[in-house]
Length: 329
Image (cartoon, rainbow, N blue to C red):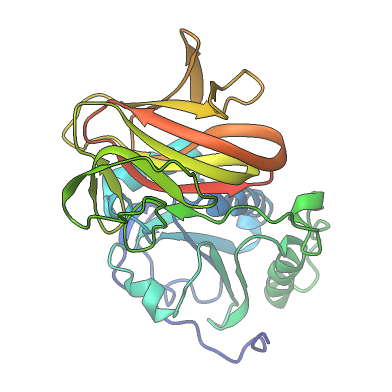
């Protein structure tokens, strides 16, 4: 059950490091409509919601709406201001962005979701909120209601129409949940399990289990990532049910070059029709070059089916954080 508009004063944002825009507090912005957007640049769901925020910024920035994106990192690299600044530029975010490296504002709002939206009215009270994707028509309606509190006779456009997959009531095909590679949240199919905080050789099991990952080769298992710990080729194998696959990965921070990944589906290189946006075909192989800690789109299919994904690399220090799955890009 949602709280009633105007019942809860929005907590002040604390512990922020400004990435884009002038530093301001909510007190500075009283009298304006403020939209807080908690996000992580490597989170695919956040990026989908971001596309709507860009539209709302274009529609309402001159009508009193101030959007503040608060980057609260899910992984270690997201606390690096330089990484966030680069991502903000690459994503073309047009509004203010602040880094919440120690999750202080996140905790102040008792937030638990990427993404999360909090709409704050002219008096500094939370008017509406939304967790995750969807609900765009209703949330834009709330934005307009807040604007009309300030300017009652203002003309506003009809809220944006939704695609079928963005509709709150759309049918959702069950897909493989996120597969994390670190031992804190990871699900590994190797019988020996994780060898925490130590370099170990993982043996690929004969039977590949679904919706977990199997590893082969020398890896260092950390809390939130799996690191290639040798110069020989290693493999990660996942049986998944989805149409598209994203990979959160990073190169060795000490390296000046990319981590070069070879991507296979059902034992074969990707074709032009199944090649993710982050991949290219080189000498008949489907390759993803990881230059920067980020989200990489590696596989796209026309439908959700059970398939076998294999990620290979011989690049020392390559870091794997999470694989995420969707029904469409």
